Image (cartoon, rainbow, N blue to C red):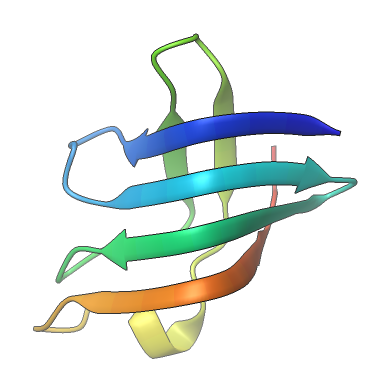
Length: 77
């Protein structure tokens, strides 16, 4: 299982903290998704890890930020 302390979106507006890759799922300890985010979202780490994930409809293109703990996202590439 691959672990990453911090992943950020390419625009550096969304943050995914304490992440683990479990098969085709990115398990996240805490997440901040910026307003007006789109899906799929490419994430990168300082260690050169890169994932593209699906953002659920409940967080897409909203005019407010989303925060969640202990959640997961499907990895699409």
